[in-house]
Image (cartoon, rainbow, N blue to C red; front, top):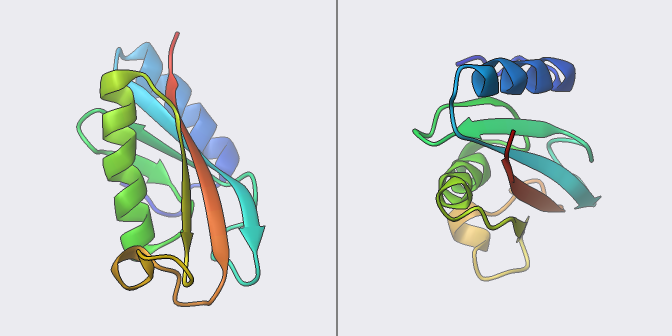
Length: 110
């Protein structure tokens, strides 16, 4: 898996994976505050086996997004996720840069 794909590549990869019959979710950065690792509009595509391409953050946050995306694929219910240093998950999956991000995770259906 490449972590270097830009957002255009991520959407093209999603199209290729969907055509191959893989079940997918798309995660999109919808809001940032302060210092954030990726800008609004950044994408991550995830399949039902946890494979992913693109980036919406880094490290632990991205791992949490991938886990949540697998659940989204399973139940077809989108979710809005929030990460930052001020919430109870700060030490588990917080942003060390001090910012906050919100990520919308939705199933990709044909």
